[in-house]
Image (cartoon, rainbow, N blue to C red; front, side, top):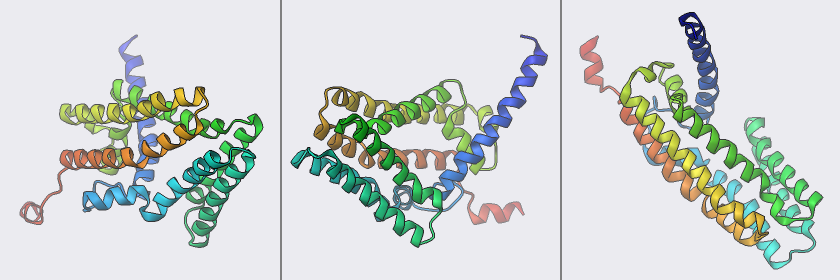
Length: 246
């Protein structure tokens, strides 16, 4: 490959990372994950989880499905209907409170698609297929991006902190973002490794239970670690330091 070809590829990679950074950074900012803001770790984690409403929205539909399916597997539409119904109620509440439509409808569409697949196949375990696919896709994306030196976390942090792709020239930041990317990939692949065998053996109750256990309880600590690392890489200047420079 000639030097001209490499020069052409580098701007293309930067443009792609800028677009991806804007998307990831915007999403992070909407859920309260902005390293530029002065917020406590506890507040950031709670905001990323969506507060009590976010916890209920994440847990109750799946919990209702698991309980009802365990008590009464047939008809399948009963447990699926209650699960989707709860997701619909949460969606209506969000829309009534004028939350962004994408945030309000995303969970309902995912729940509806999963339920439709389970009804079509007649297998309760298929209600968890979208989650398995999501873990596989996210895990692959985080791992590959980290290994090739374009960590998704670094791209998002670079956008939020206004340095674009300059972090790639900093060995300390590049290494930290690579390790964070691998850690997030490990979380998604761990979920897949535990849940996929249960899906293949049709152990619906165990699958649903472990999905809940490996959900927010593992997500929250990793969010906290990510936040602390990024804040350490981008320390906020004290008012005295800023004044002395002006």
